[in-house]
Length: 383
Image (cartoon, rainbow, N blue to C red; front, side):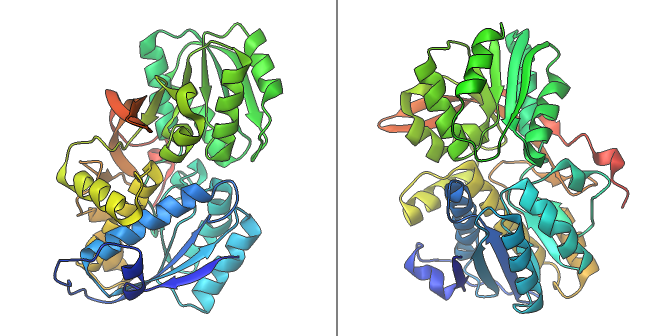
């Protein structure tokens, strides 16, 4: 298990020096970040962590202490870490979880104990609808969102018979539900794969025999890399569609030319033209020597949301701090940003195309799929 306690002073070794004056906040905040730092999903957690810490560093404050732990992508480990952070470390806020099955194991218990949870990624439907909580905020999206946009794009592109697949865990189920919500064509097949699977020969054979005219897949991290490489080698020549998670920076560098031209849905891209996004992208490259991913963007926005609430209220005053979070009074890298009544974002979702800039594979926005999208579970949330 990887463990580190990162106060702002400790970040100086890995980040650019802050030039701004230190802000004055109502109360210091201690943050517990549980994220994936080892194994096949490590790049996702590393980026979310690095984006969050960059936001704190750029603020110049010394009033945020961050305790970082590796959940190893295991629900039982995540639960143990959350208990330690709440009982021993006495954190005020929890964040960092990438995987929805881990979020379902941690978030309800954390909010039941009065802790605030700010999600940098995982946002399962169960926590958006009847399982919503006033202390739970998803800064990233609601799990269905990017997949809904992919379905809307597939419909607009004229695809009539999609084959769809995703891992068999909460985010995978939300993924295919979201795609079907906005895609009104026929399904050539619907398959749930094993979480962490790396051999997709059987699924690709099903795709080949299905009569599909398109393939939608949600396979984040190493799963996506394995699928894309095997798909290219198979010779199946059907257009691929996916959410940004399957076409993120780390994945693209590993997949290479096989991803060029593929369309994917995202609520963030490095070419969104606003001052906050430019400061984020430039600062991330300078600090870490690599382009940021969508996970880093979510981490960065989460850090800045936290700072905006700290500027307005003490974390010890739960009602005031909650109200400050709901205001979302920060400059998002996504541009306009607000919360729906179930504490999930209202935001635009784009279509990106995989391109190559020099030797780097990346994405550019080519269309807007959904405007001011909230989520399908707002009415189910009673709080």
